[in-house]
Length: 268
Image (cartoon, rainbow, N blue to C red; front, side, top):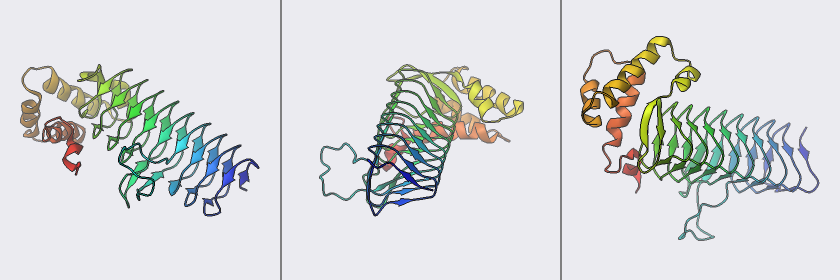
């Protein structure tokens, strides 16, 4: 059964699945699709053409799918959409923007936790099992891979890729790509501090897999020499573990752009 509070405003062109709960003073715009079992607490705003999956929970005062913050974006300009997967927890005052490009989408995957005040800019991709702590601010065109954990007030420059199962310490300002499995802290530039051992455990990696990542980290970051040259040398080794290869590919891809942000290649 669908439950809609009498004070909520729900467009006739919105599609609500069974078990959806719409709380007081919510506003659901046209073209919105909300999957079964999703709950909206009080004062949640879902803007046009947002697709939301099953089992999500939106806490009070979220604004989801509002128009991107661009100086040259006119009120009648056509923009893209926003797709949110299943079983996400979206806490108070979170804002998520759709794509600025018609026919394209900002995407949030499954089983993510976005804590109070998080902002997700336009054209971002968030994969699964991500934790974004209070007031994390993600600029447009970023990609956050599976299992990433960003601590409080972490900031991401546009076009950043944060590799899977990384951890960023509080107040980090990240302006270049971060390879998978690492810990970073500081800002402009952040520094790699070690391997995210807790993340490796959360990822379900075996002891052997974890050891190979640790060995790769030491060769890349602790034996001396230029990081890119170390990565290219390791790339030639036989029998590389798939997780180590993911680290090397991230470093080499990032080097293709002068600011070490691979996605900048697709800026235009």
